Image 1 (cartoon, rainbow, N blue to C red):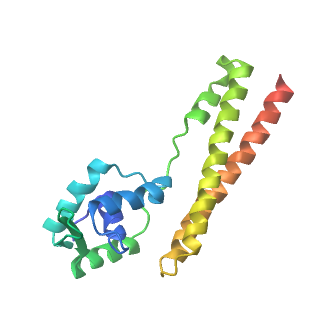
Image 2 (image 1 turned 90 degrees about the vertical axis):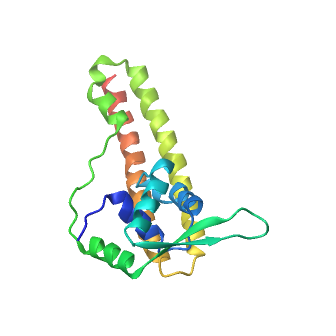
Length: 181
């Protein structure tokens, strides 16, 4: 069986939702997946082309209300089987976090106290905004009655918990720096 990259599997998964066009896929990525899985707009269409060439999805052209025709992609049985097979496979790569704040603090001895505090305060503010975004997303998902909504809430809960933990870490770290100053 052919092995595809993670972007291919992500888009196969997205095609199980109501998102069928490249634009709709990008919209879903921007409002949900982007918080934990990055896919650029430039990856979507080449991946959709590959998926259709491989027989994992079929293209149907649609138009509405005088708008230009658009391609919509629908999973084939083969595409769904490929997705299900990938979902059954063990995790190959556990995530490694790349965090510029941590990198700068690692070398914090060469940074002024004021700069360290400002760095942490700005990071905490960004995390608080992210947390509020998650709350808004959660409220929207709770209105969804699809089978997917429980799983979306599970992944969202991960984001909320890790963000909350990072906010607490900022507070603790700011206290430690204050004591050392």
